[in-house]
Image (cartoon, rainbow, N blue to C red; front, side, top):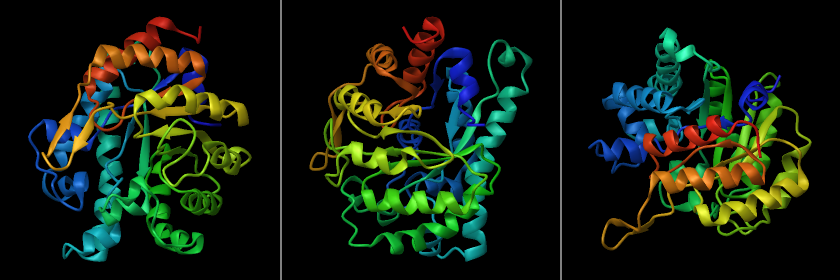
Length: 316
């Protein structure tokens, strides 16, 4: 059974967590590193576990592991052995599982809630490159090369104990093809697929979102299809486009909508949690079923979503 279905049946939506790396940065951790959040798997793993736990207490039904930028090649470039790199990738999921189990071990947290899920993050090839190509998809690689690059980590995460995989911030059609192929190699694994988008109709490499959805719509064990790390203003049009070509659950977890100024090294704009929560009700009414936040969203944003989703019940 699709692991998200019990949540949709009981409360009409599944609430995801918010940004992990940017929340760690907000707490004072320096992630200016090619490993980004995966740096703390090496240095301060308990900080990751605490963020997962805080999201669960904020109302998240699912936390996403810190494996987005955790790769064997990335760790080995830091002088870590292959065996240790594999252990660190597994640790990312273990921290999320431990936070979930700690949360669920408190009897009061089980009142009216389903046992939260853990999704193992599968970041794009561009996340490993750490050169911004995760938002363009311009890798210069063919689908077969992407399959080969992703394969070992995919199988590690598929056998990590996570409830499902989160194939997230996918910027290119070829990478979606590669991950769909790997999903077929692990027939007992469920995964959602979410794309980074440049506007309300196209993913980052310019492919229409509807073409990407059609690629996945008939694939077994695709738990949901949607969008993440995309400005909130594009989400309504993207939900409508996805809804036209699939009846699978739609997942959306946009960024805060703020814009990063690389010259001034600062974020421009403002992120208001209550406003984000209000948006979430609109996304739900349009057809989104899995809803959360990405970069620059935190527990306060998720608390606002949880308040509106659980208070509102089934889709209006």
